[in-house]
Amino acid sequence: MKWSLPLLLGVLCIFYGCKKNEFTDVDGLPPSISLETDHIATEAGREFTVKGLIEDKDGIRSINLKNAAFNLDKTIDLTLDSTVYNYNLSYKFKTTADLEGDSFDLEVTVTDLGGRKTMATLKVTMDGDFNNPVFKVAPDDAITVLLKTTTRLNVKFSVDDDKALQNVNIRIPEINYSREVKEFSNSGKTLDFIEQITLPSALATYTLTLTATDKAGLQTERKSMITVSEMPDFPKMYLADVDNAALLNSDAFGVPMLIEHSAAYTYRARYYSKAAGSKIRFVPQKTDFAPICFGKDPLNTSILTDDPEVSQAIELPAKGYYEISFNVKTGAYTVNSYVPADAPIAIGSNMLLDGTRPGEGSIPLRIGLVGIGVPNAGSWNTAQPLILQQDSENKYLFSVEMTLEAGATIGFIIQTQHSWGWWPEPYWRWDRGEDPEANVYNGGENPGNWKVKTAGKYIFKFDSHLKRSQFYPIN
Image 1 (cartoon, rainbow, N blue to C red):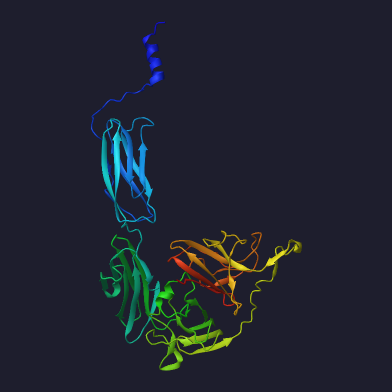
Image 2 (cartoon, one colour):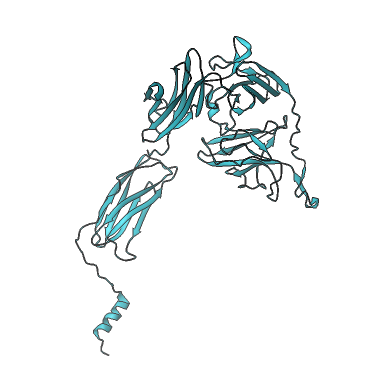
């Protein structure tokens, strides 16, 4: 049998394989690598992206990214389709949260179809800064300073950065006040600032601007409208049972506690004293005791003074509920104990699953937190709330503790549990979704998406008589 040349070549291809396109050098040069940067600043547990342009006139075979500490050895094979001459590298990688070390060299090696290699080194460091400075304590958006012979504004704030602060600027342009601070405590991470500024003794409005910048250039700005006036009829007033501004600011909501504006210049607070000797004062701004804080006047304890530097707390003599009324113009105030007229929630009593069909059975009445991001609870599921525990001594009080992560989103209402996921009464929503100040019985608004400021253990407290809640860290 005679073998023709074409037939012979076909048989050889079957047994030994044939290349459809034989490789031929174009320029015989190694590949070129143009990385977008030669240094990436990140942090352990965060994703970063290696970007760059790879070129080779002979065609690119593969790209390898390697670092032993990252447990990274990734090869991108580019020979599967048509020949690639230009490749935009964009490779995402996330380091482990427990990574040890501060600086690492990541090797990027490119091989062309001729077997020639080029390597570039990318430095990856763990000193990245991704978080803006945070004002832990700062003035309210609107502040009233009382007009006096010498009118003073206490500028008080505290700002932190997780890496390092660069500068903090304080400005009141209307009086040409400007100050830059560059010296910080806590290894350059913290500024606790307090300064008394004398304002013109005249009715006026000023803008206070605080700007904190960290060494990565990230900024946070806070603005407050400062109104100098005679004693105003404050639209809102708050009861504070804590003794420092940090505790006024660390809560998610509820500290200090909103009280009733009962008449012109007159306010009424209802409060439960957990023990004899509870101390309370009143503030029209939520974030600090300055510039106005109402407490007993040490020179005449039968009236209140507005001066935060001298006002003394009202001390409640025994455990129980109190009603405190006061007038901010005259300083007159009264303190009276009382017994609530409304009945506590009958926790543990039988609740029918279906009021129209008693035969469906009943469950013990319990209330809990229903919403999103609530630990150990379903998502908006009334069958799986985070149960609130009723106080053994005061049946109007409920509480529950939980552990939360910083940056987490949480939002909830207080709702009666139901095995089938129904939404029976009673329930309590909010006077407003963002930064709620009061509960609304069988009504109100659903919560906003509250962001957790600080990781740790939190406590939620609810008083069904006062219709007030508090949610704050207890680390």
